[in-house]
Image (cartoon, rainbow, N blue to C red; front, side):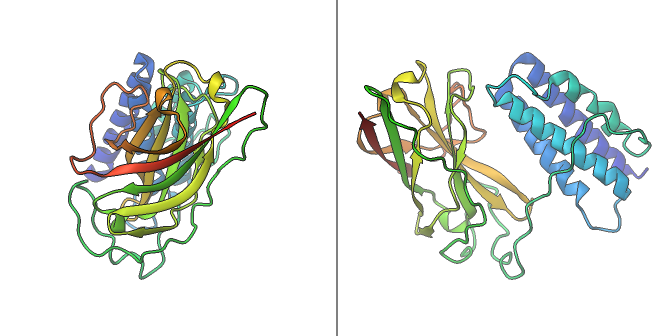
Length: 305
């Protein structure tokens, strides 16, 4: 085993242990973040085409399956459904497999398949994209002003109305970002969480943004809240996570997030502040993304029978 591979396996093992520790301590935001970052690294290695890889095709397949398990555990932590979850005890079975990946020759203990990575951008699309580490910094002119709908979105229709109950439509108009022109395939994930960060409604993704200009990415898309306003628990909040594709790292990353609390639900326009990642669904360690006057612009419509 080369020194590079040994170091890589040690880093992966340490990351898996960190995630499991956070998970067992109930620090779910940190656990999810650790699991998702490691999953992306494993997916990248599982699908790497370079000839100097020490991993066989079978080993890469196992690495890809471990990445899938990490995604499943991450999803279980974000779900309110308790049945058929991928449990922490299951996840801990992965550590010896990952540690001994070069000699592991047993059947994988879980019936999962590797998740395919998103395709890399077509030739010619990458040339302007080698930037974006420093959230305040910026470089290059970025790709063209319009986006193709690579992310189809998972928006849901409005719920049936009920007498005396209020439904909410939130129109996501635009988001202000200093480097708006450099964001690739941007979209927003909308979720409703309680104070513990547990989902109260299905999570929805917008399609890829319609256009961008200057310091704005434009969406102009309606989100139908999947619960009557009166049925939301006290302390709940609606989260908006702005995500974009990073071609150098070959995965979709959260750039920043915003949220709206229950007392902010009222008809008409609203602008809300942007916060630095990782998304803090418990709203305990919030850091503004920028001192500049850049916000998420929304418009709310309330429907009552």
